[in-house]
Image (cartoon, rainbow, N blue to C red; front, side, top):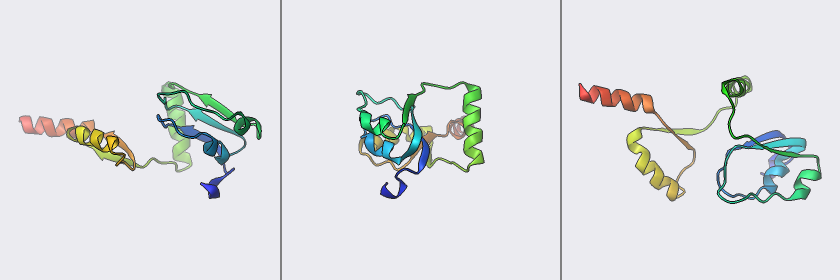
Length: 125
């Protein structure tokens, strides 16, 4: 993280756990903005100096509409921003939950409902 200090214009924080915020604010350039979309269980501790020292902003967004979501996806595509994910079937969800409990997860899980339903339909025939 040291190499990335003061290099980011913005951070979309999707973390739903209580994590130290000061290091994340350190990643932002002056006038940078962090938008919280994750919902930690406990109140987040924000060190005031981390915000005011270089005019940084902390904002939150519960959900965006279709237009906002499309705008975000278009911006990500334009700049080559992608997500590292692990695609799983619906049958794997219990195992995925066990892995989450063990902190044995490197990427976000994405449940492939379409292929799961296709397999179930094929098996029923």
